[in-house]
Amino acid sequence: MSDRTENLLLAAPGLFLLALAFFLPIGQMLALSVEGPEGPTLAHFSRFLGDGFYLGVLWRTVRLSLIITVICALIGFPLAYIMARVGPRARLWLIILVILPLMTSVVVRTFGWVVLLSRNGLIPELLRDMGLAGRTFALMQTETAIVIGMVHVLLPFMALSILGVISRIDTRLEEAGRTMGCSFLQTIRTIVLPLSLPGVVAGSLLVFTLSASSFVTPNLLGGPRLQVLAASIYKSVTQTLDWPFAAAQAVILFAGILLVLIPYVRLTARDNG
Amino acid sequence: MKYRIASAAVAVSAVLSGTAFAQDKTLTINSFGGAYEQAHRTCVIDPFEKETGAKVQIVTAYSADAFAQLRAQKDAPQFDIINFSGGQEIVGAAEGLLSPIDASKLSNAGDLYDFAKANLAKGEGPAYSIAAIGLVYDSVKSPKAPTGWKDLLDPALSEHLVLTDISNGYGMLGFLMLNQSEGGTLDNIQPGLDAVSKLLEAGAIVVSTSPEIQQEFAQNDAWIAPYASDYAYTLRKAGLTAKFVQGSEGTPASFITSNLVANRPNQELALKFIDISISKAAQECFAEALRYSPTNSKAELSGEVAADVAYGEEGVKGLIRFDPAKIEANRKAWVEAWNKTIAQ
Image (cartoon, rainbow over all chains, first blue to last red; front, side, top):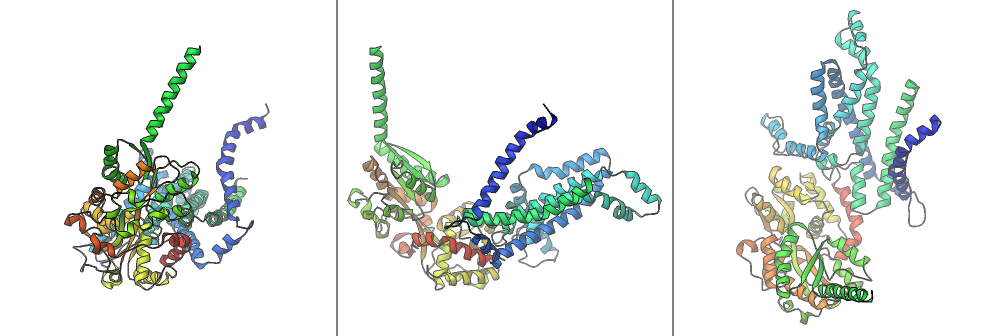
């Protein structure tokens, strides 16, 4: 058996699963999105793109995903750096702390935030007591609540992606930088950050795609008034039973994520290829 | 060998006749699961089984689901009785899936309010309980007790008002009533939508499920919500000071009907079941357990229970039934218009 066929045989179950669980449904979704009463139509797409309401939903999805990604990167980078540079024991504990939230269901974690952020919850109450907020101040059903909840859910993906890269950076480079007269922050800026960029990019992509397609957290923390695209798709499927329109929205979300992915694939291909 | 075949044949026929006998005395019905199904069992099914010696088989299926099954089984129906809460009996009767009911065969039919037995001859089964939509409010925190749907627009309450998304059945009825009190009709929901956007601007909150209403009352300082009468009771059981009041402009109602499925062998037995469902005792039991409003005029409720439901001639006078067929036909457009109105 040649290497080639052996490889193919090994990959076959995975490829089969991929075809069954990924390409088949995607194909079905594409077919459904152009389905009309009289043959194929682009009406569902023009309905989405011609309606300010749906464009607003799309814009909110993109905007929130970007904000969430940036905040995750701002918290995740220093966290990953510290994790990479402390002793092995402390690192283990930090990694456990970061991964721990992933062990509970996202619904449970989100309900935790619901309790903390509601009008009589801990955080708004505290802010009110300190005189920083008005009597009716609430965080539930705001975009802030969505961002807080999503950052909590997605931070591990960012931190772990960056950690993998930073822990491979030779510490002697930083030492060399320091002996040449760099301050600590200068070393970070000129040595660690550029070298860990692939990790930051990979983490950002993960966080962006996950938050753009997430549904549970925005729905529970944002409420029905702050719709994101995934929630709008869900509504079309379950409430108005308008499956072709739901499929069209899903295709738009899918295309949007692909658009973000392609430049990244190109970028990394050039780096490693 | 011959002997064995013969005895096997006897055994088979014995088994067959056994099932035939069992079929004679078994009814298949649907119920709605959870606390509802429990109450259904205590109030109707247990007394029925005791009285007739028959067995009742329950399939848990909500109205829309049960209706889909009924349609799919058109040629060989599996249900004897089918219970609906969303007005499906109107379509089912028109499609000939349900049998007309001769009121003289129901001993309790005479005690029912007229609206509950209006179309028996067409095949629409009698309503045996009603979920009444009114105003659920916190009797301690709310500065005044609301009396009508107009009170929802009171600026003093806006910041503490909870509206329910119209993807929820009760939410839909509550919204249609608000629309009507603002001068709208089923052909024009704009007045209702305008009222909703005004309320949202003033600080009202929208939720999409009933547990969220409880959460709003418990944690988010909510005082008032247009919702079903049984929910005030649920809130009270959770330790909140909730009360229910019917709006003076009218009370939209969701009718729970018990329908006789066509082309089934056991219609006599099934009629007996329906008869027990609409009896005074069963309805008092339902009202006691879940706070659904009775449709039997003879039902007697204690003061505490009566306060939570639409009770007596006076109470049921204001009941409004928005045309379920029309709601179904417009649902898609209304939900989209609603979503656009509430979007921030």
